Amino acid sequence: MAECTAPEPLQRTASSVPALLRRRVSQTPDRPAYRFPEGGGWRTITWAQAGQRVDAIAAGLLTLGLEREQRVGILCATRVDWILCDLGILCAGGATTTVYPSSTPEETSFILGDSDSRICFVEDHQQLDKLRAEKHRLPALHKVILIDGITDAGADGDWVITLDELEALGRLHLSTSPDAVTRVIDTIKGSELATLIYTSGTTGTPKGVELLHECWAYEADAMMSLRLYVIDDVEYLWLPLSHSFGKVLMAGQIANGHLVAVDGRIPKLIDNLAIVRPTMMAAAPRIFEKVHAKVVQGAKEGGGLKWKIFQWAVAVGRRASKARQEGRDLGPVLRAELAVAERLVFAKLQARFGGRLRFFISGSAPLSREIAEFFHACDILILEGYGLTETSAASFVNRLSRFRFGSVGFPLPGTEVRIAPEDGEILIKSPGVMRGYHNLPEQTAEVLHDGWLRTGDIGEVDARGFLRITDRKKDLIKTSGGKYVAPQHIEGKLKASCPFLSQAIVHGDRRNYCTALLTVDEEAIAKWAADHGQGGKSYADLAASPEVRALLQGYVDQVNATLARYETIKKFAVLPQDLSIEAGELTPSLKVKRKAVEKKYAATLDGMYDGVQT
Ligand SMILES: Nc1ncnc2c1ncn2[C@@H]1O[C@H](COP(=O)(O)OP(=O)(O)OP(=O)(O)O)[C@@H](O)[C@H]1O
Ligand SMILES: [Mg+2]
Image (cartoon, rainbow, N blue to C red; front, top):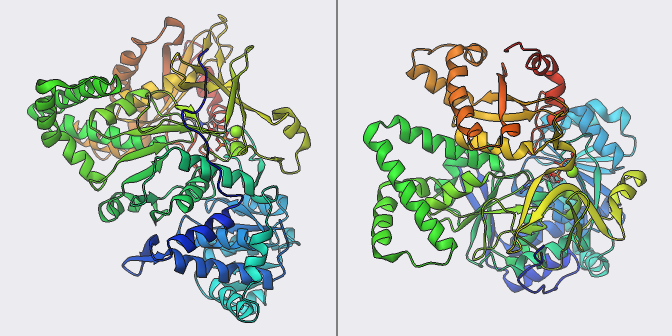
C-alpha cells in the first residue's frame, strides 16, 4: 500500500476558535466578513462589526449565568445569526449543541435533553412552538433566546427573551466590565468542550459527538495549511450549520478571513449565486447530481444540433481534463477546440454559478466519479473530501493541484491513517477526533482505541496515495452466492447515468441477486411526461406507468453493462413517492436512511425475489 499522508506540513497557530476570531478581528478589522440577506437586498458586516456582536452575545450569556462547557442549543436555519450566536457561546466558554430546524418537537427535545442544554437560541416563533410543546420535558432549559420576532410575556413569562435583549444585556455588562469576555477567551483550554454535534442518523439514532476547542482549532489550521483559500475568496455558505461539514467551513473561513455569503434557503440558491458570484462553495453530492441531470437533459431536449454540439464539447473537455490530470500539454489543436467548446457550452454552465468559481468542495456522502469528471470536462473543479462528525468533518480532501476523481484525496496534515488489514476499515487519528460520544461509554469504547477512531467505512489507498471510499462496512452486500457488492458504487453510477432518477437504493444482502428501489425526480419526470403525451399524470401514476419503467430500464441496462455479473440489477421497483426528510427516509443532510427505506418497502423488495415483477 502506498503511504497515505498529507503532502504539506501542518502549521499550528491557535488553540481555540475564540482565539482565532480575536486574531482575525485584530488583523483585518475592516475587511468584509459576512454578507447576508436583509430587507430585499444584501448587507455586509466587517470583522470588527462581527466581533462586536459576538462579544455582546457572549457577555449577555455570561450575565445569564452560563458556566464553562455548559451546553447552549441553536435551533435555527443557516443564516448569519447562527454563526454569531455560535461564536458568542464559544467566547463565553459554553458549548454549542446543534439542532436541525427540520427536527420534530420530539427530536428537538431528545437533543436538548440528552445534551442537558440550559439555554437555547431559536430562529422564530415556529421553532419556539416546538420548545413550548416540550417544555415540561426540559426542566434544565431555563432560558430561550428568540432571534426573529417579539416575545409574548403572557405565554412565556421571562422564559423567552429576544436576541436584541440579550445583546443589550451584554453591552451593559461590558460597559462596566470591558474585559469580561476577554478574560474567558484567554483561559479557554483546547481540552474543553466546544460543540456537542449530533451525527446525521443515517444508520440509526443520532449520537452526540463531543468536539473540543482543540478539534476546531486544529481543523482551521490544517485547512489553512492546504492553501486552498485566498484572502479575496468569496464563499457561498448554505449547508446546514447543524452538521459538521457546515461547522468546519466556518472555522476555516475565520482562519483565512475571506468573505462568506450566508443563506441557507435552498430554493434561493440559483438566484443567489448570480448575485454573490462566489469563488468557492461547498455542497453535498445531491446538488451536483441535480445540476448534472438538468444540464444533460436540457441539452438533449434542445434537439439534434444542440445535443450534438453538447456531446462534442463534453468529449473535448474530457480529453483536456485527462491531459491536465496527467500533466500533459494540451497542444494547439485541443487548445483551439477547447476554446470553441468553452464559448459554445461551458461558459453557460459556469455562468449559472456566477462565473467566478475557482472550485467546489463536495462532502458528506459519495460523489460519483462520472459526475466529477463531467464537471471537470466543463472546466469546473469539484474537490471531493471525506470525514465524519466524529473527526470534526474534514479528514481527507483532494488538493487544487493534486486531485483524483472518484477519490477523497489525501489526509489533512496532522491526520494519521491506517487501513485495517482484515477488512479494509479506515482508522483515523488526529487532533480533530472527538473526545467521545456523549453519555454513551460503550459505543465510544467500540470505536475509539488509543486515539484511533474506527470510521465504519471501508477504503483503499491507490499507488499514488489517494484514498477511495468503497462503502460503509455495514452496508456492504454479501449475496447468497458469497460475492461482496458495494451498493454506493452502483447507486452513484445509476444516478450519474440517468437524469430522471433522484434516488437509488441497491439491495441484495443474503439474496441471490441484486435489485434496486428507484425514485424519479419530480420536475424532470413531469417535463418528460409532458413531452411524451403523459402530461397531467400524478407522480404516483407516472412512477407506476409502463412508459416510465421502460425509460428507466434503458438506463439500468446501460449501467448493468459496466458491472460484474453478480453486481447487476436484475429487477427494480419505482417507488410511488420520492424519499423525504419528513417521512424519516432522508437525513437533514440529505443522506438516504437505507434501513428505514428497506423496512418501509419490505414487501416491494420481497416481491422482487418471488418471481413477481413489481
Ligand atoms: N466523500 C465521501 N464518500 C463516501 N462517504 C462519505 C464521504 N463523506 C462522508 N461520507 C460518509 O458520511 C459518514 C459521516 O457522516 P455523518 O457523521 O454526518 O453521519 P452518518 O455516519 O451519516 O450518520 P450516523 O453515524 O448517525 O449513522 C462517513 O462515515 C461516511 O460513511
Ligand atoms: Mg456515522
